[in-house]
Amino acid sequence: MQIKSFEEYKNTYEHSVREPEQFWAGIAENFTWKKKWDKVLEWNFKTPEIKWFLNAKFNITENCIDRHLPAKANDVAFYFEENEDGKPNKAITFQNLHDEVCKLANVLKNFGVNKGDRVCIYLPMVPEAVYSLLACARIGAVHSVVFGGFSAQALQDRINDSSCKVVLTSDGAFRGSKKIPMKATVDEALSACPTIKKVLVLKHTLEKVNMVAVRDHDWETETVTQPPVCEATSMDSEDPLFILYTSGSTGKPKGVVHTCGGYMVFTCYSFLNVFQYQPGQVYWCTADVGWVTGHSYITYGPLLAGATSVLFEGVPNYPDSGRFWKIVDKLKVNVFYTAPTAIRALEAAGLDFVKPYDLSSLKVLGSVGEPINEEAWQWYHKNIGKEKCPIVDTWWQTETGGILISPLANITSTKPGYATLPLPGIQPILVDDKGKEITGNGVEGNLCIKFPWPSIIRTTYGDHERCRQTYFTTYPGLYFTGDGCKRDEDGYYRITGRVDDVINVSGHRIGTAEVESAINECTAVVESAVVGYPHDIKGQGIYAFCIVPKTTKTHEEIRQEILNSVNKIIGPIAKPDKIQIVSGLPKTRSGKIMRRILRKVAEGEIHNLGDISTLLDPLVVEEIVKGKI
Ligand code: 7RM
Image: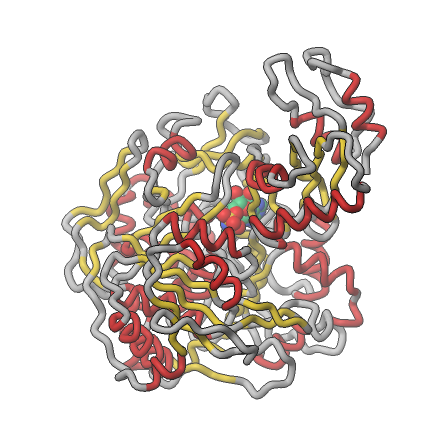
């Protein structure tokens, strides 16, 4: 499955476009199927309906675990590095992983979880989080992981949207020097989640928690008594594997649905090729399982490839900003995959945190989540990779399931800021705002993909029309990514950022509409408009313009109310960095907020606001510019 040279990449790519079905069937041959497919692909981007490896039967966990046991039962699947530095290392072998996943799968079965049922996972970055995803997959339950930084309200919305039956959680989470409650948040969420029957609670921070009789159960007590075997449920290729909620430009987050077969084939193939992982190497992706990167490149991709990974519970700057490099040195990490926001934060902390550690084990560096600026790229290349490690700048989305555009390590020559070239099977196309294809090189446009790949989104949970509307109607016949993109003279792709109302804060996608609706819940605020602005560390920060009528409250009191409301409705990750109180917003005569103007103000481009003549009241712009924070 691994491409070995640029020549081979070009030939493989050409083959994958000419004969996609034959190409992907060849890749799919590398997995263990109980029954092979009758047909490789059926697709229609209009409805949309996309099916890969039709009627094939298998279970992804047998491919992640059981398949490796004869040769590597005692090889390490995960090194677990705790939040607290200096704890003895926990090494989890493939056999251990098998046993823990089976025990947990048995608990889920005893809880009445059946194939197709939804299970919500709300856990910190502990091995049990990985066990949870796999235990669901083992019995055909659909996991819906909710990132631990989301609030009770956000958790409740997600549980109810997909009517989950069970929640897997812990007493709390460590975050640097702090302990964060999780069970208490679950309790609050469950005050209005009628479909939840059982809650399994892991003891982790050892904070006292409230256990509701009949509903809540202790993790350890339930799992220890289970046999370490559990037959893997036979799944159809197109049975759902998981739901993962993600933000878009409008409305509430939508549940992106991925299915078993195509997702398995693509995450494994992309993992092996992008990182050029070699047997025996140690791979570390610093993402959280709450995001798609943690699904595809901590859990499924590496395990399918039989890789040894690092699982890290902590944060980059605790106990100090050398933590990542200390772990790289200690575990002799060969492949390191992180986000630009972390790189920028560690760059700002200074080289004194890098110098004490031996980073010579590193062979490949990766970046994901947002555009990487040239300065961060160079710092990473020079100070971490010592100018000998390629940087794979991997572009992809929750909806794409896996990496679509990226260099293949040591095969594709890299360029700072460029995701470079599409993986085999990926057919990107740039279109103008009217949907006309922009051909040739040295051009820029909206990034679309014109042919399905195995791990493309299948639907948005419970609302197929929303999936169609969001991704397949803007440019009929194409999957629209929501990203702007350049194709340079060499045909290399450079993703420039979202062209819709989505803000990317530290690699986390946040919809402006969601933040606005949370702000508008404050009684003091009558209307708000939220835009992104360039932020040195986070990539983008959140700037909120809020209309507050005459009040006796101070600005600081109102600011606190707004922050509390966002924290409560979405979570701390969506808190605005800047809040400006205004008496009006720039609107067109038809009442549409002109975000273009607000974006410019937030960026500090106050002298070049463009045409404001169509505004209902051009004077509000003057006031907004004067009040800029
Ligand atoms: C994997 C992930 C997706 C959005 C996507 C882009 C941005 C991600 C890159 C990137 C430039 C990259 N999934 N994005 N990777 N932009 N270069 N290498 O992040 O669903 O959470 O976000 O993130 O805007 O549309 S995601």
